[in-house]
Image 1: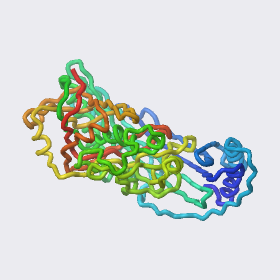
Image 2 (image 1 turned 180 degrees about the horizontal axis):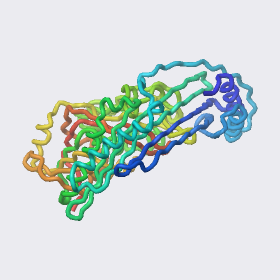
Image 3 (image 1 turned 30 degrees about the horizontal axis):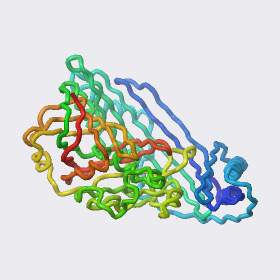
Image 4 (image 1 turned 90 degrees about the horizontal axis):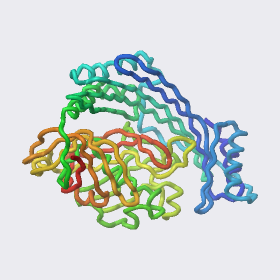
Length: 459
């Protein structure tokens, strides 16, 4: 993207006022989306995001400048702005870069850019048609097929010169159903770090049927009763509970400043012994996977919690300085215009040995949160509130009638102590995680788990 000799001159300019570290991040990203409403194409959208950022450190000070001008002159001006904001020294430094090839553990066979829009529309029509035909109660169906081609280059004053290309493809179907005047929405949004070969394993019709079934089921459901009760949380996107309530509190962006419920607890038991939680950016083809992070550190499998004991945090370079700890391949950013910081990749609770029958059968009266929705969390306290997209009452160990309007309320550090049963059916769901460095693709996951007691919001 940018020749090595130009990167060397830009980095030399960046450290010219006394910085002890400089980084040049360049990106060229193409996003393509086809949107369907009903059976008709509503829009076809193309976007290109291209630019660069120069970031400099001096001890525990950090400055970043960005630009859309990636000519040598534009990059030098950007570096000069960052250097001037950091200090007024006059250091003369020679930078020597060596290219590092980290390999690609996420090969793409069918680049989405090579596939005609007509083929993408056919996939969407299959998905949306299946949803619309599921039941007379389905009143509206929308779909989107998104593909992203994200190219990055990272060069640093430590001599690193590395590039990566990240291609992701995702199908999303939303269905609205009406039963007895009540409307509810169902959705299904599979995606992966692959090309159009995604649809060799993802059936568009099954995606549409999933969204429609959920909408119809919830539209015909009564309201969930409120109270303190045991809850079985389904596999897949159920992992959003750990991601939000605990995962963000294990990121160095919180820990380094003392703004985490898990500060100073390395080596301590913070969860039930059945809980092992992992963040792994090296899983081939997974939605949140990377070859290198946005600082050029190779992706890693980080065991965060092992049998209930806190083992490590997710760490980026700058916050690692504050903590006196090495980076863990966790620095991520939405684009060049955002400052990178520690973020999750594919985060999940590892499989256990309890069976689905044992977990559900152990609950005399409680809630089965089959699919979770969005929510909010305070990473300092770990207090959270999450919606349940699809829920069912459990009576005498049996899954009974569907209920809507349920939410789960609690505190992360309490809840992971109460996860006392963990199934073996690990599944991950795809999402976009928003934080200080923007919106990034992340996987969340878990097997079916039981929380022995949690506050359920309802009526």
